[in-house]
Length: 440
Image 1 (cartoon, rainbow, N blue to C red):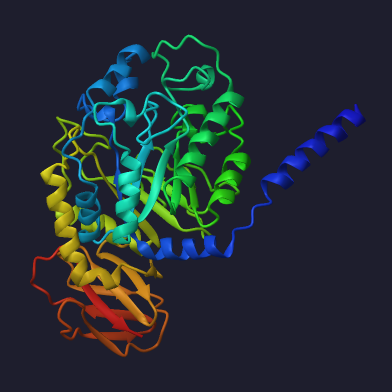
Image 2 (cartoon, rainbow, N blue to C red):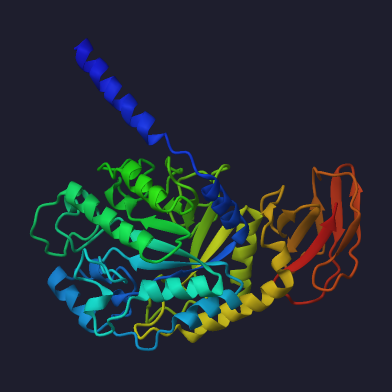
C-alpha cells in the first residue's frame, strides 16, 4: 500500500511540476502589457449558424442532427463580406483588436483547413475568411485574436458522453479524446503557421465538461491536457496570448483572464465564480443586443449611454471590454451595430485619454460613477447625471494641482478636507459621461 501511495504521489507531483513550468517569454510579457493598455476590442460571432437567425447555439437548442445541420454549409455564401470594411469599422470605433470566431461549437471552420471537410472552402463562397481578416488586420495595424472552441457537436471523437451540450446531434461513433486532442493540435498549428502573427487564442467550451450550471464545483470531467495545447501555442508563437473562458481562476499557461457578460466582482449572469486576477490582464466580453450570433428577433439594442457606462466601468476595474457583433449571413453588419460603433469611436476621440492605457481607480465603481488613472492624472467619470457633488474618501494625495473638464479644459472646483477630496459638479450638459481630470 505504501509503495502504491508513493508511486501515486510521485506521478501527481510530476504532473504538477510539468503543468507549472510555464515561464512567459519577453515577447509574451510585452504582449500582455500591450493588451492591458488596449482596453477595447471587437468580438465577431459569425458562421453558418447565422443563417437560421437564432444565434450561434441553434444546432443545440433546436436539436438539429449532424446530417441536417451540415446542409447549412451549402447556403453559406457571404458575398457582401468585406474584410477591409470590418477592420476599418473596428479601427474607427476606437478598438485596438479583433477576436474572430474561427470554429464554434458547431464544428464549422472559417478557414482552409486540411483536418475537417466542414469548412469555408466547401461552401459556395470558397474563400478563406480567416486569411482575409488576418491580411487586413496586419495591413491596418489591428491585432487579431482567434476564438477556438474546445467543444464540437459534430465530431464522433469529442467526449460527448460526459458533455452537457450537443446531445441530440445523432453522432454514432465512440468518443476518443486522444484523437480529438490531435485534431485540435493540427488545426491550431494551421492557424498559428499560415496566417502571420496571431495576437492571441481565445478558448471556449471548458464548461461543457464541468458540474451543472450554478454550482461552484467547476472541476472538469476530462483532462483537457492544456499543458500540451498551451505548450504548442507558445512554442509556435511565443508572443501569442492564451485565454480560456472556463469561468475559473487562470490556469498555468494562460496569459489573460476573461469574464463573460460580467464585470469582475459581479455574477449577474450566473457564470462568474472566479476572482479577478491581480497578475494577468483581464477582459470582459459583452453583446450590443442580447445575442452573440445573428438573431432576427433580438432588438434589445443597448443605448449609447449603456455602452459607454460598460466601457468606463470595465476600464475603472483595470479590464478590457470585448464588444460583440453578430453579422448577418451575407456578411453585412447590422446598421444598429454599425451606428453604435461609430458613435463610440467619436466619443473616444474626445475621451480616449481616460480609457486607453489607464489603471483601475483606487475606488471601485460608485453610484455616481467611477475612476481611472494614468500617470499623475486621475479621471473622475461622472456617469450619474443627477450627481452634483463627488466625495472621494481616503484620497491618496494631499494636494490637487489642477482640476478641469477633459472635453474643454474648463476649471472644476475641488478641495481636500480631512483626507476626503470634494469635487463640485456644476454641469448641465446631457453627456453620458462627464470626465473630470485631476492632476495630482
